[in-house]
Length: 343
Image (cartoon, rainbow, N blue to C red; front, side, top):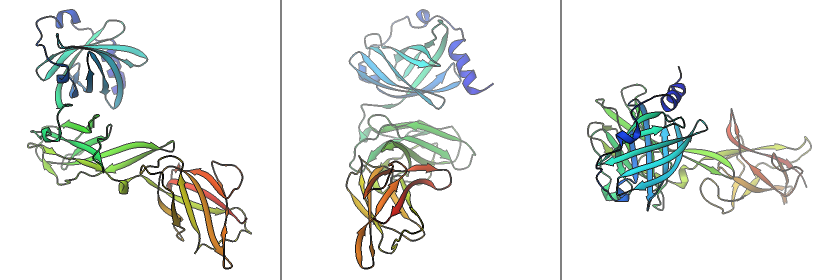
């Protein structure tokens, strides 16, 4: 039976004690800020569960992760009762979660549309209100921040820790709206490596960047570690430009051939500034930040600088400048193709 099937059964078919019985008692009142942040735990005591809460007044929004799938949720926070209630959609059905906050734990139930209930337990892994100075490592915990070169927080980066000795022993988490993350590690002796992926979109195209921690030294899991990541323009996603002649009679001086790229909106480096690159024999035009561009080209033919006509996959016909974008080729990766012709 697949993991997805098991998860569906747990959500929709497992019968447990009524919520009204489990959620009664005298909860400890707590301010709304105590709920905000990242939490990690189990569904039905077995399935991995991650949650990130953002509280504003008596409203709460966030993301619930089951397996490797994120489910946005929205609900209410009753600070007087320390009770959070929220809804999310799973398998086209609206699920409801009710949980009580006591100290640093959340306990409650996931309720299916048919009223079946599954136990939910979560433990706090980071506080959304803590600043950089509050980011501290603990035993079997890797924590830190993901930011850009200007120090702005980056949300949604996938951060991971891999054990250096055990195969396929790893832990994964995501940075929150403040760029902070915290990952619980397996209680295995030995050291761990840290890494992260940042996924985004430029010019309507998805891209992925591998980030290295500011300190890439393997760390002892029993002591934990702080590992921060910085997204730099120099590490952005890039592709290669390939050129073709429109027909066999086209004359091109490749030694003087150069292209001017004007981003049609921010590229993967976040820039909209035009730039010019020379053609490299055997390599085309490498290392161009992914995005959509308005492209023009010139060369020197018989001592005269000449502007070439261009064609692209995205724009029909030839012109002195064309709109072009990268496509993902299974063999060559991200490529942008241009077709050259004499004016």
